[in-house]
Length: 134
Image (cartoon, rainbow, N blue to C red; front, side, top):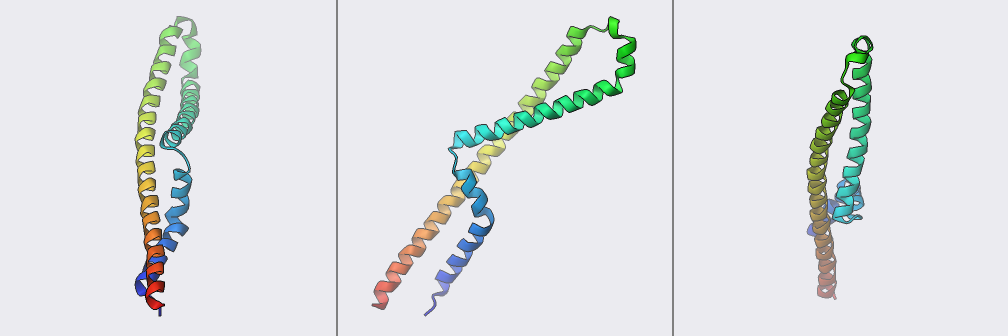
């Protein structure tokens, strides 16, 4: 006899494994600190590349004024502005990456624990059902 509750739980578990389960499993393979650190490292690399591109574009657009005023520009102050902008940009994006990675890890951990409980419940039901049928 087919147990409809078992089928519903197994269907829900199969859908989870096919969808979010794979992603959550890869997240939960890391320790929380390692996962968050790796995400922040990826964010820092991306922010650095994006900042270099933005600086390059800015310098290209301002090339005319830079070339005409090159000897009168205070290069130290100019560099300080870029460094300050880079630090602020990094702080903002790294904080956002930290918060998002912590949240993702927590949600993945909870979903994995819930999946494990459903698996134990399903396993417990199958043992209980087989004893009743015998």
